[in-house]
Length: 75
Image 1: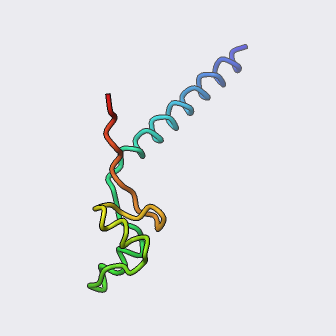
Image 2 (image 1 turned 60 degrees about the vertical axis):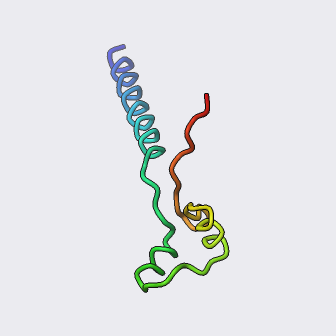
């Protein structure tokens, strides 16, 4: 009986840890895709069509691994 209670507590703590970690990753700062970072290091801009289209919208290309700030919730 004691071991089942301990197992339940451990499982609950692990679940809470993953829940908080997933929530924190949603609030992560936006970053550029690897191809855009590589082009910047070379002093150029990325020539991928998807990156060029995203840049026109002042966003990072999510197809190439970039992330954008989450949209504000509308109430």
